[in-house]
Image (cartoon, one colour):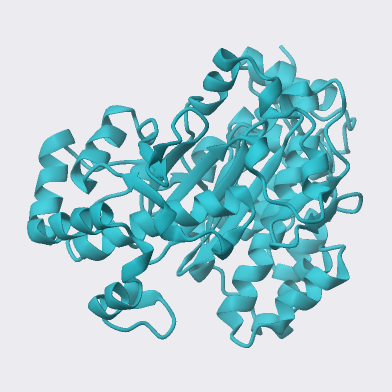
Length: 443
């Protein structure tokens, strides 16, 4: 792997994530690079002997880990974006390729045990270890670290020690405490959704809309996978007749036609969440994946999971080639929503759905919806949603729904460690830990 880069070589947005939006916001808005002003304004931690606060070294380890990841398969790279998405706004899109993290000695190893220990809630730690296969233990741990790091970044915290993550009866995780303060009405309903399947573990969060996210893997990497046609037969009643017609239309085009149409429509390779159409992709199963992850994202946003019959909601998706062309035309961002109906009734005034390609033929979907449709038997999650959708002016709610959808940013495991635990994690993972380079002298 390449040597870690000094903090001055990293984008300001990257250091802003480590230092927290409240401390870095002014410098970030002004577009300034850290340099000597960092120890004065970016983190407020004062200068260490080397001229940098010690925790600034955190991003050097992240940069090194990203360098080792080689190819992000078309997902935005944390080294290029800083990985924070839009931390100050609470709208995050993070994805980690769990297949690329191979800790020594698996779940018995020092690094895995260290990261597991960052989770405060005993039940959550025990749930991780209940999985039989290591690959499932790994995904479960990553998903729990994602929600805690997202909460810490949005709140500007340097550790997970004060975070309380709870779950609804339907197992939807949420930030119970601390919540954004009364001065952050723009974060009043901060919530998130996580999903893992195949290679990817993803998190999406929203500041005011209720959020749901799901990732769907290609058939060949699903455990116990049979032929796609067997899946279609077993799940025939989960898609509507119109949706199955879309699947068959994509199948008739064939892999080569879909790839060629996608290339001709936009030219060149798609970037970021747009991904690339891979020649071996099965268009029929890809179309099925896309519908399935949209339905999952919808019910995960609501919180009722599989209790909501999937055939009640119907989506009108763009063909894969048109989707990819729209992503390219927008510089890597997914197109604005698509039609959805529940029991034949358009839900467009209340909901928005977005789709993303991830690497390795995985698709992801993100749903944004109203607080009034949350299903929460115990009521604890609902109590965290202190700005009900009904209180919004229609134009303001429409603005939230239609806010530009960010692409997913790929993050390494080192990114999921809070600043106060960076040095200890570096030791547990066997990463190099040298003193950060001094910034340039003030001119």
